[in-house]
Amino acid sequence: MSPAGPARLDSPRRIVLGVGGGIAAYKACEVLRRLTELGHQVRVIPTEAALHFIGAPTWEALSGLPVHRDLFADVAEVPHVRWGQAADLVLVVPATADLLARAAHGRADDLLCATLLTARCPVLLVPAMHTEMWEHPATVHNAAVLCSRGTVVAQPASGRLTGADSGAGRLPEPAEIVDLAVLLLRRADALPSDLTGRRVVISAGGTREPLDPVRYLGNRSSGRQGYALARVAAQRGARVTLVAAHTAELTDPAGVQVLDVGTAGQLREAVLTAAPQADAVVMAAAVADFRPANPQLSKIKKTGVDPDPISLVCTPDILAEVVRRRLAGQVVVGFAAETGDSEGDVLTHGRAKLARKGCDLLVVNAVGEGGAFEVDHNSGWLLGDDGAETELPEGPKSLLASYVWDAVATRLKRNPPAA
Ligand code: CTP
Image (cartoon, rainbow, N blue to C red; front, side, top):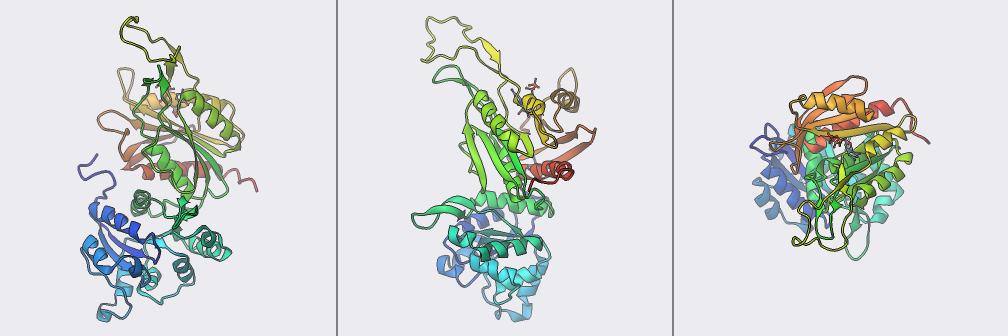
């Protein structure tokens, strides 16, 4: 890991943060704070409506830059052209129904919409609105038009909306928005719509096998890589089922069905139930290889027990089972966290595991010395059953996820999605 931190890019980038007039504008403050902490220069352009929710002094204090709000201020600097042209990323949080409509029609009636027209960089619009507005055919059409032009329209989350109601249309969490923004800065082509119509199943996290009601055998997987895979797949158009083992610290990715499980047995049940409907199955979870043979119903006491009371039995190899039951055209991806040893290095173990497991693709991560576990960045190799070996550069876990989905999408192209 570079001392600068996981999501930090080699050089600071120029980001325009547009803010639409919705209650979720307050969450854009957190997005701004996180982006500036990563070292980026962020220029905020709020709409007039946004200033009803959060005033210009807040944006100026958080960004360290003056806030421009009107097309006819500082005309000599031609800001509506200059900022769009100079930006590395234009991000709009929240993108209201009105902003989506104006952007889809190419309107230039305020500084933000004019900037959207002059931007030649990736543009990420993050919608937030009531469910009825998000699902209205006009909004659906506007979002589709924008996507067809290469704008990335993020999936809104489901959950509590303004007031007591809940549903689709909630702004995704700021960390998730920043993750997508950094991904687009790293790889402008990272979020195509090439998984539209596809169903994918992803396992994430680490299973825990109980010894008694208090103790368990577990592992250090946080689930972050699996969640990044889910987030990127949903953004690329897939219908995602995420089977999550002990990932309570993580926020559910927007637009994803999350099934919580605890043990290897529960994870197996959930994955094998969902897999027959899936075009791709990605086993990113760290599954226990062993479990206590006789978990106790009451707490094991240290007095009066055999000092070696734990006998273990093997858990089923779920990935191997998915491969055995694989449907024609289904793509199966495994993960291998390796340290290397006297028998061979990380890649040698990875190649052997790919052959042993029989999956189509295997992501190999080097672990130990701060690698892979409980951090936001990752690197490794992607091995294919066709002998292809691609080095995956160090970067946020969403970047690694985007390379995995590239490889899956390439394989799926040979089988068109069912109607
Ligand atoms: N896996 C699985 N079921 C298990 C163990 C692992 O489905 N009981 C999956 C993991 O989700 C991962 C892949 O198999 O995608 C490789 O996991 P890993 O622990 O590296 O492999 P093992 O087969 O357990 O081999 P070893 O621990 O001996 O290296």
